Length: 303
Image: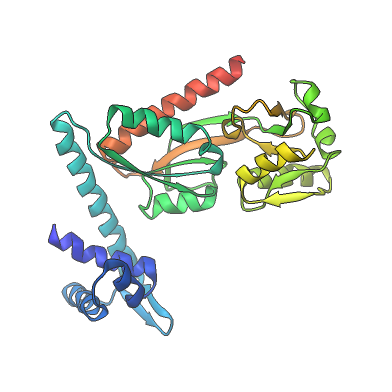
């Protein structure tokens, strides 16, 4: 196991971009870390880093080495999880990267349910936009990604996928809240709009739809925080757009589906890295999460 710790130093330097920052995170002396890297490069017979004025950057050999290191660390975690599972007491750790839309209800409820059965399993939940979440999975920083409208990637293996119609969100006293049926986008745009900014998939989806129709969007408020937009909708007669899974069960709020003639449904994806063997804990949580997403989807269709 010691060799993996030494190799992990290389991965940390690659992540940090410098010996000094990596040494601070690892709590070891920079000189000792430098010697470790030199020893590895001597053993491999080639440098693995480009030494730059502003820090360290992996070269082609280093990229191959770091991918190997991440594979080895992931395999070790999987074996540890399998060994623990033999005793009937599930242990381990699950790292999930998810879009903001799922942190209000879906992810907290599913983590709670899983830990009620397996309290010795730990979780790391990273809130990331669709692009960053994919990058976290590829970099082995997350086992799973639960995201909206991810960019095409051959490195992702889909575990579950469904389509969800965007909903117009407003407070209960808003003029558009008088009906529960689908609402046309032009009726929403007649009111001040409080929308996700362009870092989020929802906004990109809306912008593309409006561009195809030659419609100019006038946004009163925009933010990278869906929670902020929900709270603003409670205070002003603004209209926001969110997916059903992101809307809390709050009697002060109302939501209506956007007519699908105006906006196509968005794709919700649960994915892992292509070819990666998940730990028992992560694989079982993925199964639970996929089943729950399917039930929620069926329930929303029935309603």
